[in-house]
Length: 267
Image 1 (cartoon, rainbow, N blue to C red):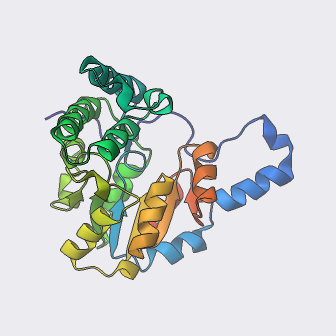
Image 2: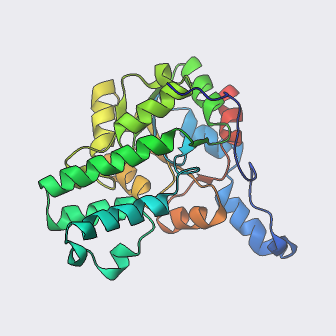
């Protein structure tokens, strides 16, 4: 088991991005108002949440911080081509920087096949290697511990392998906050988000109504899955680009730091 310090090690700012555009105060202020809700807005989401469903890669850690996701995607493509399957992917899919795109593409053409099973296992092994150097999201560890201490229950709902999420949580001493509620990618890849399957599994296992839960995610697919499951959604974005993607997908409340959320939970 790999142990890393429990501090809030991270790259980049904890709060909203500040760039040269800040001289144009009106547009920036409008974006900030959309991105950084006040305490009252966060309290409205937090107060009824007896169960918190976390996406894994993003809100809890940056899984590929030290193990390039782009290289993993490239390796999966090379592995397929080594098996004579160059024509299986489109040019866009071959050029993708996201290994999940490659996996989904193969599954669309050969659903449930041995090829998909082997490719998914290769991706899981790469994710496990990445978990060793994953970078904790700032404030995630104390937020999870504090939220658990005040009585809310935690669950993982991710498109990554549940083995990977459990390995990372154990390395941070957080497994007790989630055990046994870690739900992730299965061999049935059509259940990946935006399908609400892993959210529904968590809610059913925990005996929780959707309205008494909160989903924290960093991708439009997280928001879509939460909508389909009837679960309130809080968007988390490492930067303004991802925040904009979430807002365009319909996310109403988006934060670029977990620190304001930690203050609300502590309060």
